[in-house]
Amino acid sequence: MNERLWFFRGGARGDFRVTALRAIRGESLPEVERLAVEREGPEAGATFTLRGVVSNERYLARSERAELAAVQAAIGRPEARHGALIPIRKSAEWWALPQDERRAIFEERSHHVAVGFRALPAVARRLHHCRDLGADEPFDFLTWFDFSPEDGQRFDDLLGALRETLEWQYVEREVELRVER
Amino acid sequence: MNERLWFFRGGARGDFRVTALRAIRGESLPEVERLAVEREGPEAGATFTLRGVVSNERYLARSERAELAAVQAAIGRPEARHGALIPIRKSAEWWALPQDERRAIFEERSHHVAVGFRALPAVARRLHHCRDLGADEPFDFLTWFDFSPEDGQRFDDLLGALRETLEWQYVEREVELRVER
Image (cartoon, chains in turn red, green):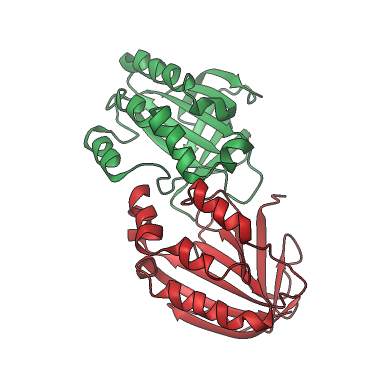
């Protein structure tokens, strides 16, 4: 068992009630009532299963990481009863870019870290990578967020700001799944 | 089937005869007679199976990639009858470094691209990533090389130079498997 691997199963069970599910770009996911977020667990009864691994950082410099680490919260605070799963797939064009150009689009031109920083510490985030799992996966990333009900607007603002960036022009599929615990 | 996923199976079958197998650092792999390099194929009869995905570049800038692309050869030239599989695992310390520091160790301090460039176009190379496959994999990378018998010394020089770099101080397991087709 890989401790970095997480499963997101949509279906009839799970700690989270799905309050909204919509496609932002491309194909949606099937409507489900609940979402289970777990390291293992029975596949049975799941309408869909997405999986991803927590991995090393791909773009952050040490100074940026230190700034984030100083304020960010971990997933799972008791008061963070609202959450969202945002599965994303980026285009072949994105993946064909060399590292320096992806980094420049990510931060120097899209300010991904700076935009995310504005939502801290209210919004906690855990990023999972799917693209190199070996199987053909429907998404490249699964990002899992949680926040308290009062911070919902802050989270909406974060999503809105990211979706207007140059980086998001390389997103060819995105689904937004909102949940409550 | 993921077109980027490759299997390296050591055992009694395969296009390549194993001429040497030794641990450079850490635990070795079982002795085998032959190596099969394939996208699919029967697991049956394999003494070990390693697998990895060809993925996006993690460190190369556009200028470096263009310089390499102008001279490098693809795996599988008819005259490239000698080859090597080099499975590597890097330390937790390496993976905990931020992107800018891994890049600096990789190129500015270890000259990985520049050292590799000296072996071009004689030595062809294909890099496979294993760390984010989801399962617990024994290695982080599998690098597959081929070259003509006359270029064996050039390949040995490449390995020797890389193993003296700062980057290689983060390698905690390395096996060298030499083959002939």
